[in-house]
Amino acid sequence: MDLTALLTGTKPFFVDFALLVGRVAIGACFMIHAFGKLGWVGTGNMDGFAEWLKDLGVPMPEVQARMAMLSELGGGALLVLGLATRPACLLLIFTMVVAGAVGHRGAGYLITNEPPGAEYTINLAIVCGMFLLIGPGAISLDAMLFA
Image (tube, rainbow, N blue to C red; front, side, top):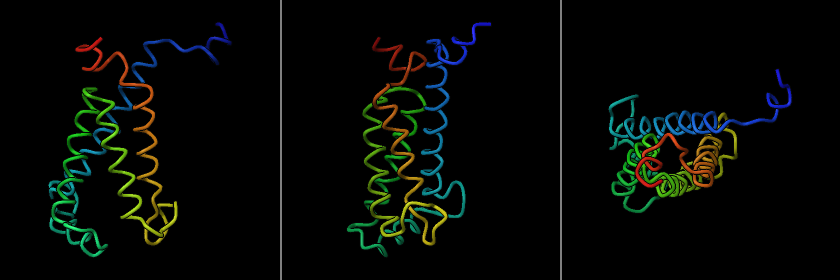
């Protein structure tokens, strides 16, 4: 066994497979959050989310709530498919920056803070930033359609 290859080598298939697994996991995470806003999973719903945004002083909270849900649902689905991956990541990064700045304002970094900090939104934005820079990989609709 070549120990150097094991410790430092990277096979293109493994990179593409890792990108696929990461895209599907993070994309599904965004979609599940959108489903929660729609009231399909968890205890929340769109009215409750809009009310929370209103309490935070967000203008047009009903519109903003739907925009957040649509960006998570659409961006998440595109990320899962590896279709329009980089534009989807830009949308999701923007959504997470806004969520962190508005929804977790003044709460610090740790999600275990009371109220919860922006740790989760920051990390989701960073992961999307990685996909923005690296791309979707060869196991994606982007690669199949545009390569």
